[in-house]
Image (cartoon, rainbow, N blue to C red; front, side, top):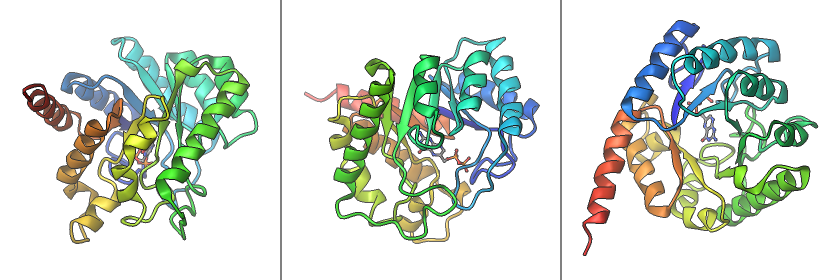
Length: 264
Ligand code: HH2
């Protein structure tokens, strides 16, 4: 899954694909690079990011979805917490609602997901984006994330979302201590995969990579760690990795798979 953020402030690609013409060029590039899904976002979820009004978010993503749809059948997911944005995106041609709040942000999120009938990514987050990194706490991070995702999947199904439309995501970096929580969570991915839903893993260029690599590495200098994390996810059986660098990740996954296939 290749990331296209149409935002001025995303932690890595904020402002790069802004305004919309640049975002379309980037989307084309990710398709050519081997993406299987494009994830479009019109609001940054980085810690401390300012909320974007609904109408502005729609104005950022809908024209881009239409433009991609006009030239490609590539599945598109919309990265939003707002039901109205998801509805507008699906009407424009998006097939998946990627919600970092796991359909908890608005009272009508669950009902909207059921009504839209699209795929849904339910992501774990402790707290909410503005404050989530303040003091994250877990007794057993893998068990708690797994229990949360199972409960949200149940809630979605109870609201009418079909089981086969549900994906789950452990939410690396969302209300998690860089080292104490993110690393055991990635190491314990098999237990998330064992829930029985396809797992999406997003760790591309996130700060824990810098923390592991001695600190002080800006997002531009975290590609190696991103690929290492994607391979760890693949080994654990995740269904997709959400990345900024599609070409490099596709190559790493192809080589890893080829080596696995050559095992005797
Ligand atoms: N991470 C980000 C945004 N959306 N969605 C899912 N399902 N999983 C993730 O790990 C995830 C996500 C953060 O990355 P990015 O979009 O690059 O940054 P920003 O939120 O600042 O736009």
